[in-house]
Image 1 (cartoon, helix red, strand yellow):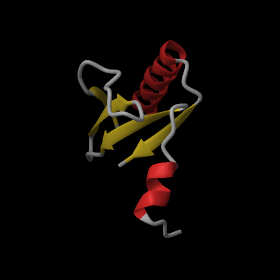
Image 2: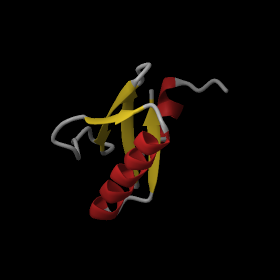
Image 3: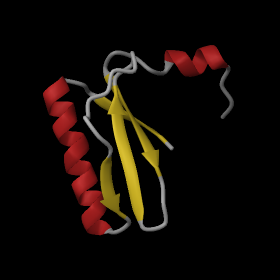
Image 4: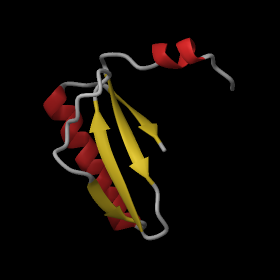
Length: 77
């Protein structure tokens, strides 16, 4: 689906956490931000490309959501 730049910007609201993910073959790196660009994590979260790594990544995101009171996550790769 194609969106204009303004339509893309409107998809990011106060209730969302934006998680930027740098995908690698063995390890992935993630950082979490709010709609203003304020970072929730002090450093990148590193997780492996297996079930255990993704389970840890899910726990990391869930923890940030609980602490921040945000409702949804928007992944950005």
